[in-house]
Length: 556
Image (tube, rainbow, N blue to C red; front, top):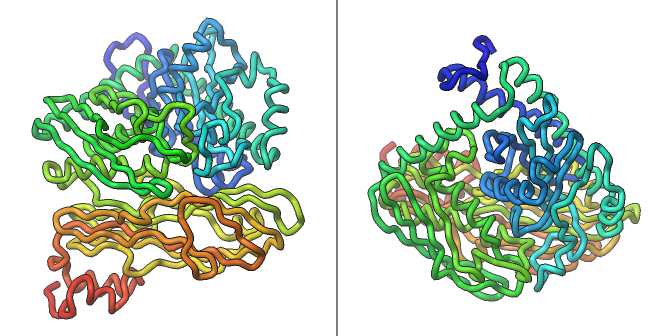
């Protein structure tokens, strides 16, 4: 830093603050890069289902890696608060690493393991680092929504010290090893997460020395206050009132209604999900921590989308949901596939505010599609992995939706070159799904179509956790809905929520949902429709259906 920040200064110079703030984020990015490089599983290495964060000494989030999943914005501070309640600062020592995968206090399912490391300098805690990593397996039924109780879903680990003063708890490691299908990958990812926290510890210590800071607390006050002020200012610009929306979702053979009411007064907002249907007997129920995080993420997109993630964005916003409803599940309700329902929270909130802030919302997205595969590789070794595919992004009021971009998740795609040896399946085809994006003045993003062939020589169990199979993404201001999602085996449609068996040679086809359009389709210029045809986003027949047969004579 050209102008070192000194601990004695009460107010940080704006330039110094910007430099220091960016440095903290770059440190979390370095931690995330180390985790990605050293991880064993595809969902971390390719899908980037992870996050690395820095907290101040009070446990407030101040920096988060740019490679992250949006839901971790709101769940990580909840996890941190529970960890510090279980292990107050005076009980922590250098070399400690605290861990938990409890879905109630974490991200909503057991596959996400949170590790927290206190960072010491001069014998005192100066910050905390945290990583959250989606493990490839945690025992039980695996990553699926087929469970009827939380006890079916795997090992639910309480808050404990994975490392105590630098010594690893080998009993817990052995317990995990004996209860997962791919122990090498699971333990490899756990230790990669520990290593990434070491990177954050080292680099944060270097930064504090360079900046002349005793800890991160002074920076935390400025970062959180500035972010809170920006969110409050944006909320003030939204007209006061009560805004309501509801959507229907598919719920393992049933239909459930999600309801939200947003009460906006001055610089504060309260979101209540009263009226939402009850939990179901399948692992798609959503714990409140996940609901809260997705709601906070959506409001941040509306109010302060360009500000880095930290606790300041959450202060003016209150979230509530009735206990026992689909968006406030408590044990024994299962929740491994909580994203199936939870990813509807952003479009639910965007829909409530679409008329008052149309330039700040996004039409419905095709969302992400997860399938879990369990079986054997061609060499006979055990296999448990996850494959994800993307629907299309919803359109904005002035921008077309991106193709094959998973709204609400920020997940990376799976490369065929790495997936095939990992799973024993072959990616036979991966292409755009033309005409799947909803028409509009700005069209929704198309989804993709993927064909997987079972070349392992063994039966493979497929656990599907799809949404958007009955209720397509909805457009705004006259924009048209996107196409629904479909799963097929050997050309025959199967239930996209459940378990299926792939015999050797069988083909699984994933037809991903499209994003919805924004604005009247008749307002779309012919030049943009022509470009959609050239890019493979639409077919001539689809364009004629969506925009009318005379669209080529429309103005540019």
